Image 1 (tube, rainbow, N blue to C red):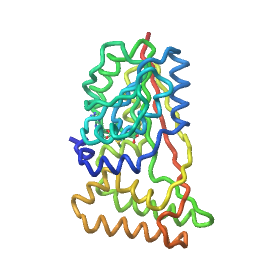
Image 2 (image 1 turned 120 degrees about the vertical axis):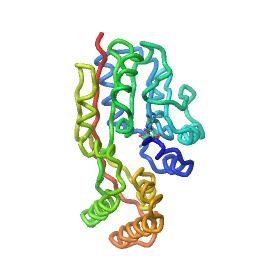
Image 3 (image 1 turned 30 degrees about the horizontal axis):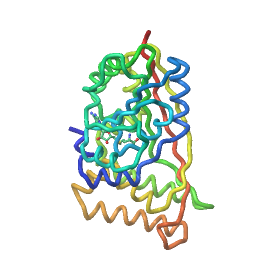
Length: 271
Ligand SMILES: C[S@@+](CC[C@H](N)C(=O)[O-])C[C@H]1O[C@@H](n2cnc3c(N)ncnc32)[C@H](O)[C@@H]1O
């Protein structure tokens, strides 16, 4: 099962440290959509494939209750380690078997996770648990991302692209859905009222060591490491050295700017 990829404790710990925090651009887009389609009150949001909970915690201020669900016990354990808002809780569970009552959920979200789900079964569950006019938001960041630093941005972005090329043979077919910007997933959304938003852009300041850690957290880097640990380690260390050389510093704490582009699929359950 594809989700086994996320079940190692070490992998879950990398997630906690190196995944993106909740992005306000995506969050605002989703909240505006929910307001437009269903309106308040916003009682219950469920974040599926929540990983170590970054995406889940971002919803806390807007809902009475937020529940993060992930198939991986290791990820749920990491999520629970964070002193989070009191209205957020986590449960181990499957996207395809949601343990919520019929018509009880205002919003279902999944960040960088839907490509791992059985979409037909997941949609059946989404249809069942959402309230009338409740919404589902499925989003993901595109790769490769851009890296910027003074006048060497082109060189840095090229190093990122080369690393993604090295990792490509280890990428599961499911990750190809991200490259297609979830086209198949959009088609599989059963609600007639659906839309997509592309080119959501945001920036993040991150050290060279964070970028390295982000690569290590990717499922396909984990696969590379399992199949050929020495080569995986050498590749990622070479990438780090290439970054440092391009920027002209010796410390991996040097701060770069990461530019992300994301997309989001939005749909609303009929009345
Ligand atoms: C790439 S991570 C995304 C984590 C987080 N939402 C984020 O935005 O960084 C994908 C997560 O989906 C979980 N996952 C995969 N298949 C799943 C399924 N069928 N049901 C629930 N969670 C699943 C994995 O265990 C993993 O933690």
